[in-house]
Length: 343
Ligand code: H2U
Ligand code: ZN
Image 1 (cartoon, rainbow, N blue to C red):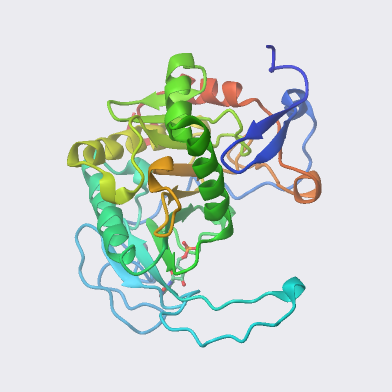
Image 2 (image 1 turned 120 degrees about the vertical axis):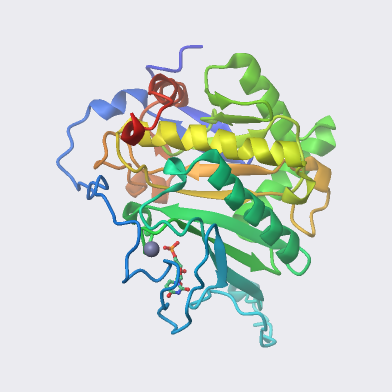
């Protein structure tokens, strides 16, 4: 099978969607938008920053002098803890339902100038522990807990201070429901979690694997849409964050550190992305069909300033990518494992 030259389509079994792969297409000239280069240095404390320790946020609340991580309720939350009952419209074409939830902001470090990629694994471990504790707490009340990070202005991140967000809701969002349907139906047919099979096969093949540690595997999935997209899987399937053993949890900080260093080294820039965690929802029909996993969706394609746009064909037909997932994985494996800033 030679998939590196000719246009072809690949199937994403997790979302039941197809992606168009056009390997030859990066040769086309680019006279379009250039992103701002993020190779700017920042102070370790910014008196204007809403997230730095001790500072006052836009809401008027003051941040404590935190020394590792810090969580607060989002001052501009997209979801509310209480919801007004909403009367059904009575028209199946114009359905509406109420939603309840909470939004929180997670500061990864008091250091304004750092990113996860530049933090030692021991500090990333603090973030993992916090994600886990937040998940444990919020999953008692809400069916879906979406932990995520928007990194870089290209991804709409509002502040360079290292931080992520958590949105928890009583309803299961669209993409989560698609993953639920796909994994539950795969499990019914095979008796094995879909992503356990994917992890086993990718480790066996090796060509799309970017990082392999004792308990985790990071790969450019066969069906990746974003140029350097990553799927991060535990080597032994577990349904949710609540099922992590301390050993697997500790190893997660290491694999994340290694992956994020490769990302930054690819274009020698602070690599932008949106990342987030998916696991079995509180109302999953079969939680053991699920595998806890993280998606990393980075937009950069050619350089630190030229991104992939998901527009025309992608908005109207289906996602399209320009380099093959195998080429992307090779390029991520080829860069140094030592962060360019610390060489
Ligand atoms: P980004 O991940 O997109 O940068 O979002 C940061 C969040 O921080 C955003 O949702 C919140 C915004 O509402 N925020 C506060 O809650 N208080 C502030 O003082 C500034 C930003
Ligand atoms: Zn700051």
